[in-house]
Amino acid sequence: MSLSGLSDVPDGRSVSHLTGRNVFHSVTLPIALAVCVLVLALATFGVIAGRGLRNLEPVDRHLSAVSRLQQMALHLEALTIEGLKGNTLPQPKLEKLRRDLDAIIKSDSFIASDTPHRLATARAALEGIKTDPKASLLAAIEQVRAALGAEVPAHRTLLSGVRHDLALEFSVAGAALFVLVALGIFILMRMRSRVFRPLEMLEHLLTRLAKRDYGLASTVGVDPIVEPLIVSYNHLVNRLVELENESARNKDTLEQEVRTATETLLEQNRSLAGAERLAAVGEVAARIAHELRNPLAGMQLALANIRSEFRDRHDIVERIDLVVDELRRVTTLLNGLLDQSRVTLEPASNIAIGKNIDELLALVRYQIPRAIQLRTYIPEDVVCHLPKDGVRQALLNLILNAADAIGDKAGTITVRAVAADDKLELSVSDDGPGFPANLLKGNIVAFRTGRPGGTGLGLSIVSRLVRSLGGQMKLRNLEPHGACVRLLLPRRGQHA
Image (tube, rainbow, N blue to C red):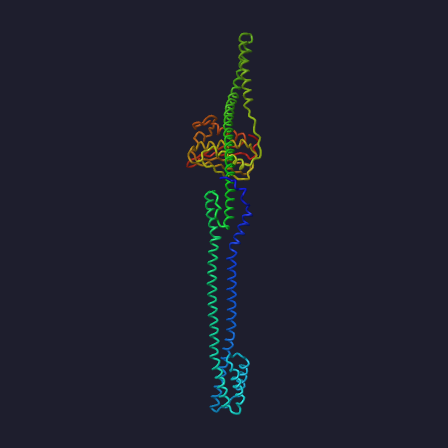
């Protein structure tokens, strides 16, 4: 995919600014209308609720006044009945009636226009109760009843007005609710066409991107609110394509470097194997030379004794001197061979066992079949004073031997390291067929192997390294099958 359009795409901040501005302009009008309608509806509800409260206050006052007036009429009727029976009217009750009537008159809570006049007439009638109690009480009752008769229809009229206002409030509230719902639907439709659909389109584009479809989205004929999103998406796609191409190049480079390192390791391993073979040959030759020097020295001594016995026979002495000279030459050759077989020892250094083994396994992974798994159980903080290359080569030989034992089958090779006090235990185990019986008895001999194509040097090299460090190598078979090699080394070995 071409990346030529990358430089023409605005940066992320410009795209975000354009997108936010378009979204704001797209939803401003619906939101403003919704806010206005909501404020208007709340204001209408407030006005109607306030008016309803104001209408209920006079109804409450009028109902209280009418109730007190009814109580007044009942008290007057009770006193009138007592007066008709010839009983003396109690003055405290009369005084209380006058005070209550004065309070009712002062309340000014009546609706009928002639009610105050009627109540004033009833109050005046109560003033003449001493002269003619019966007539005064009847006159007061008549006026109070007349006032009640006028106030009851007026109360019904007041309730009808309140009921009308409540009906109007309900109608206005219903209309406001309808308008608000309609406007909400309008806003949702507007938001769907201007916001939700662009988001759905963006979701579709991201789904394509998740499937590694790096096709650019077209900006022809799209909504203005969507266009910045599409531009931003195309910018993202171009950047992802660029990063993926760079990642692919880095991957190729890394694979090439790993392949080169692996080939170098294999070549070094082959060279080292050849060197180890020559070292093993030199070791055998040195042993033979060492064993031959003693009998040669005995032969020289015997010939010297024979020469002294036949010193008068010049012909015999001459032949004996020739043999002695040849024996001396052979001895000189054997001494030179022993001098050449001495190996320069690798100095020890502080090494982190975990890091050293991890680096080794990272490269060994390319030398063994993929069906074989490598597992490690190694503390990270173990540091030992040992020959780094010697320990590494020993582990390499053991791992490759284990891989050869498993073959092309699926299996597991486990490398463990345990440090305790001044000892280090390294072990390499596998789930292959195990060691033959002669190896378990300690018969590790160079160039002797039971595996076709083997050199017979792997365990011999490891054994020689361990001995040079003052350690031990132990072999054992695992149950139900498998082999394990344990290397017991001092944590401060001097050389290898």
